[in-house]
Length: 614
Image (cartoon, rainbow, N blue to C red; front, side, top):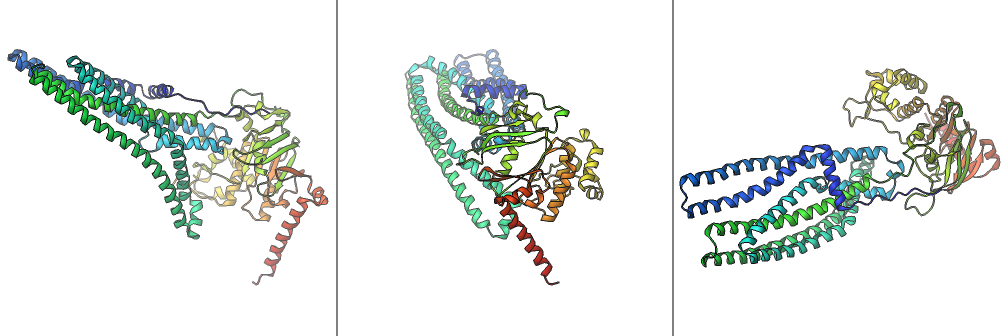
């Protein structure tokens, strides 16, 4: 079976700029309008600031009367106040609005991506590296990728001002302009080297940052906190964190050093350039080749031109970095799904349910793994058949059920449902055929009823919820609560939430599976935390409640699955033995040996319990 192409899209820097502007326009059109106004105000205000002294001196030199002097100077002063107000207003909007709008928009898109993308991507190391880069670009430091419209406004205002001032200076004397341009070229080359170093080390720095975030999550995980405290591992783990942080800081300092050297070179060139330019201007004035008004104007313009050149270089550098980081974000967000999320063939009709499931030469290898988790599996699960999947840890049991559920795409071969390839169905429609209970039972930060229905209150069938609670034996617990099935779960989110025990969580998960009432039931060791007797009773209860469905059960306790029609034993990534319990015991192979070892262990436990002193 040919694998779909999962190569991420390639985004150019120009495409990133257009994409960012499009996002801003669709989010808040007024922000881009403010950007355009801000560009005009940033150009106008400084220019008027250096133009006003020239006008005053020219008026004085011309011995203008009050009728000419007051309107000329007063008019530009009033205009200066208005422009200053507009600049302050638009700058405030840009600084407080652009980045916030960008982050909020991309967080929503990222959340949607994580909720809807192929489950397989979440475990793909390549995608996780791409996501680490995106997280760093989106949330770390001042997030330049979120501020591209603002950075672009800065670049435009600096560039327009530079051209305006260059024209004014060039009209006075082209030699001054030539000196300024040569200085700008040297500064650009220095900053370019710093940008190239930043780009060449981006993967290293993102990788180190991703490791820091993983360690940070581990250190904050309540589940791990118990072991950290009881085994006194805090000092050891803190040492690992400090070492990882030091490695990350080392790379960031190298980048900072490159940028600092570029800025120092820029400052030195400004001193040399301005010194030579000012000396030349003074010579022009002393030799009566320039009026005093023009001297003051050009003198100020040269100082401002230096700022515009530095601003252009800084804004261009920031824009380049921002576009690269936006590319990182878009690569993660646009990471392609392999499964069919488009139109698919119709799901089986009620008459065709429960379905049959077939494996034809199916193999699966995890990304970056050196050997397959499953190899050349050929298997048929009949309609309504109960199959137990057993085997040692790492034998491929969970991988098998994830392939059945359509969470994984086979590396080789194909999985069929009712004779049709799984990929022929729409992915999300295919998922509706399965009710699953996995070992890791996660609760939503919502009510018990919503956890069971997996829907908002308005779409939850309350009578059906009650029936499911009764069938799984959780009704006594919910009836004892003040808010019954409206009681909230997950105390980390809701202060008044309740906490369910392991057994109660398992019953809630089964209630959830019964509420969905799908034609295929998959149980992946949901009772691993229970004792053997309780697990056996739970599986017998599952068998009664899921009568007439195609069922797949996984358990590491072999006695719990004796009720199944067939038992499938995985060993070394292949199907080693298939048959009923009695057939496999008669075969006297791996299954029989595992069963006897477990039976003797539980018998010994029971014997020790009976012999224990009272």
